[in-house]
Length: 58
Image (tube, rainbow, N blue to C red; front, side):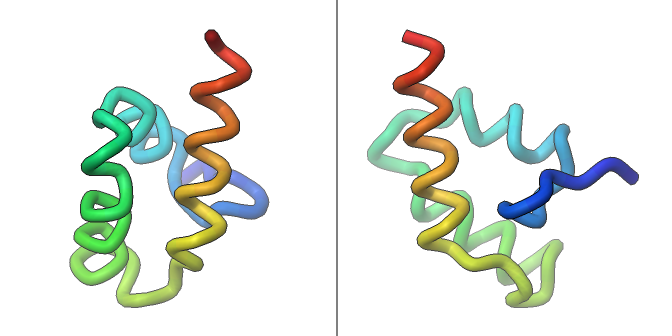
């Protein structure tokens, strides 16, 4: 399973989060954190990385 270095997400989950609207990113990260990642994600770090990635693509 490939994982992102700092975010701790799998590449597949990270790409899925890039498609989520900005308003819902935090909710989706919290949902993933509670269900799949057993509270091991740093929610603020993941949200910041997603927003940075979205800006660099534009």
